[in-house]
Image (cartoon, rainbow, N blue to C red; front, side):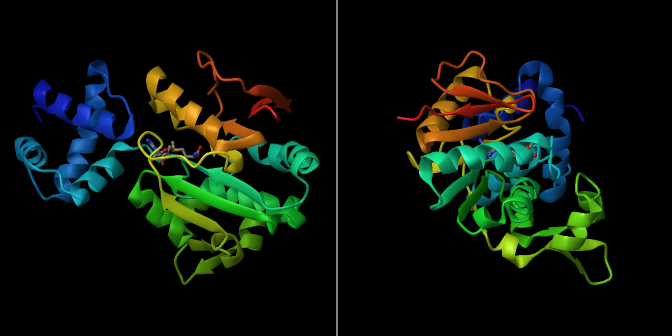
Length: 274
Ligand SMILES: C[S@@+](CC[C@H](N)C(=O)[O-])C[C@H]1O[C@@H](n2cnc3c(N)ncnc32)[C@H](O)[C@@H]1O
């Protein structure tokens, strides 16, 4: 498939403006498989037809399809393990000494297909059951398709083999019919308020959350966007609240007054207490 620079640039610019996800010229080839998916979806066999379709008018549905195909939704249960252990062993006791045992607001802000929020809630239920009930939990993503799978609470045979101990599968999931599909229990699923949220363009609620998980999403953003998003996250946290980033993500080059705390080698970012 011969694709002109004009076409690559058109889609790369649109994706950047809408999501902050950057495709530099040297990475344009990474769009090829996205184009194939889009052409298949719209039953087009010519890249120029796809280009003309998007150039003429981008409807909300066309926008959603493009965003679904442009995002990388890679995730799995208990990814990197420590962010979940840190919650019950370090973060909750620290927050309890500041805020007592009232309502606890947690936001998982790039939740993909839901394995991360489900892992957090299984951890709470099993290791801090008294806190499970007082948690108000929001999970969001930019991809409608990822959110729709997350909301279903159903995971296939491949999903459940990735990071989920068999004991937790047996305890918290129920098999669906004959297929190797498993549904998370309703007490966990009903606890999660899934919603669409674009970290780059949507308005953050200020001073609202005790804990924000923002993992493996900022790696796709350039420094300018990262600064904007992290400033908004800082403002969205309550005093003494915690930000948890992905493995290999850091605040290097970002000038925000977070205090660093360490749990078992994992860095946690804490908004100063007033
Ligand atoms: C690689 S997944 C990480 C999922 C999960 N946090 C984890 O660590 O396993 C990145 C997610 O970020 C979402 N995403 C990308 N850009 C976004 C944006 N601007 N606003 C909100 N979500 C975004 C993608 O749709 C995708 O589901």
